[in-house]
Length: 640
Image: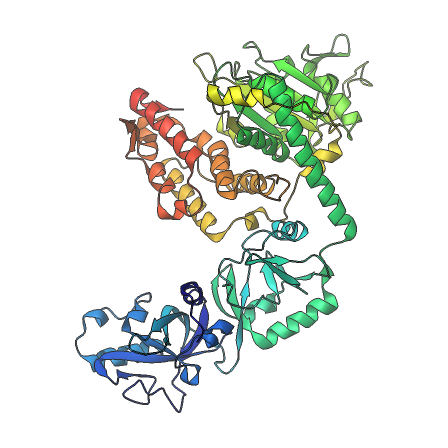
């Protein structure tokens, strides 16, 4: 006789199924006292049981488990109802007949979501199991119980990430669609339905073969009318007949998701980005600098996804040299990058850009040379340029950087930097036109020290920049890293086509997030906004974090160089926590205080360590930042 594995039983017990109270059955299993949908256990009338008839696909392995499965009915006992809300006195009711009627009234004509619970018969000589169940939800529904329904999964990622996984032959994770079910014929992802799926299995993982013509169609409004039940965004049940019509529709009207040219372009971009990052890491070491890999990857992703990246850290960590190393690793020469030391005397844009001398009718560029490099960048849009503002907070940034702050959130075609009024007379207008277009081929990087000589950033600037802090590398690790550095051959990545190829966009950024992640951000916004109505988690911030997640590069095996949980953690620290600063009177309860190395009375710390947060990330970086702020609050009554 075949031995039943414990892992098979556990796996079956994770399968979602829908059904209804079997009131229309003519013959019930002999285990019950009466031939009714809700009755008593024949051998022990103190126990109430009920029968549920499944109307959705059942896992095949269920039929391989020996045991009674009369009329395909699942059996439930009182304990199976603990996940749903019963009448207030139900669990304390002693009258069995009253309890039986309560169960009938609660379940009658309702759609029931449940999972199997395989109860082993310890008294049987042979290994047998009863098909019991655990109810997870009930719902008043207008669907027909005569029809069959099919579980329809979603990978819970963006369509871009989904299609990328197919190209790279990575496993497709279907979080709520159990492996005991057959491979799905269609999949939902973002606003699309994918069909013509050719599945292969490798080491127990589902992989979609890119061989064949996978097609997709846009979801229309009629689709939602055929959903029988929605467990979450990652699993729903639809009418089996409607599924067949979708498959026909995909075959006839669906668009192929891959063209051969697209696959080759993607693979080339992936390969070149990986090569660049290896060159960048080694070049940094050759320059006598030493950073953790995750800091270098983080810096690269920030540059890819945002017009302005600010590197923060203690003096002497080589922040400016890191930015220069990045420029040189891209293959940029001094015509294509410049370092602008910021002076405390800078108080207006003309100090770094220049001004129109109306008496001489001539534009006088600033000695920074920023007008010249921006003009070159406008004339050579197929080449990359990089402008590095060294110690940019020695002066109040909003004074001299104000024109750029306004440009940072505009679309590429709208970023027009005005040097002077176009109606003014200017003899050297051929060299310095009244307006310069600042395109995506210009990278802005700033470095900052945080001490008593520097100025704070405004929320307006922080809302438009990634502010990353470099981690310290232990000296013993540093020694090993320098010992193992390698000589590199440089490729020229200085053409703007490379950065554009490496950059990934998504039509609706919020679709990048999973449901539990959005719930976390909602909660984070509520906590911050309850303390300061001018702060919180804006939609723009969510967009930037989504792009950050989407643009994490992969290694040669297709693995993300920064895993998703860590990416969310880092992005929150860089985009949200930077704006949490102020006096104890207002921010004390939000930030808390750190006493004896322990954070106390902190709404933020509580949120980042609760069960919802832990399912997303350990939030190592965010918690360290909250702790740092709490220490400042304890000692100074103010957190920066």
